[in-house]
Image (cartoon, helix red, strand yellow):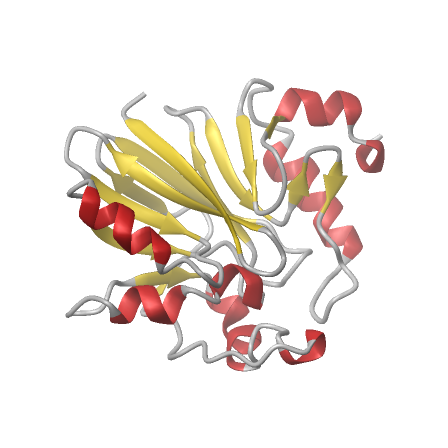
Length: 211
């Protein structure tokens, strides 16, 4: 593997924020920076890493609460990429008010993602898969050559994402999992937005919501 993945458990909802490092170049990306993600800046500096982009699976506040501080720590600011179907959710504060949080999310992401778009990072490629259900613009980042998916809040170890928030849709969520995720190799690692990692094969066998 050419990638090093460093997870951070951050924020009031114990999010997994991922620092993904291309080992040969020292370039890095951050996926779903939660509140408190500014601590990653220290690791970037200490290890001589260059932050290239911020990738967002979906616009719930716990996954984007650290974007503004991270991006504004650089000049020019670090590009942030998200699917535009979640722009309205971002503009509404990512659902923070409903849970009693006040949050400045800053401007909308500067780059729009699209279904089946390919993102090149070092020697790895990531395919964007649009997987609505948890939110309208939820995406996952799939790397076939690395054998992994950053799957946000679509799917967890032995659980699934909530659909009772605004914009959620249970039928869409189940369809996204079965049509976009379960068609991929069973050994593919699933790195979720909360909790431990799992694999596609394990979730096919053990997830009680997907029997």
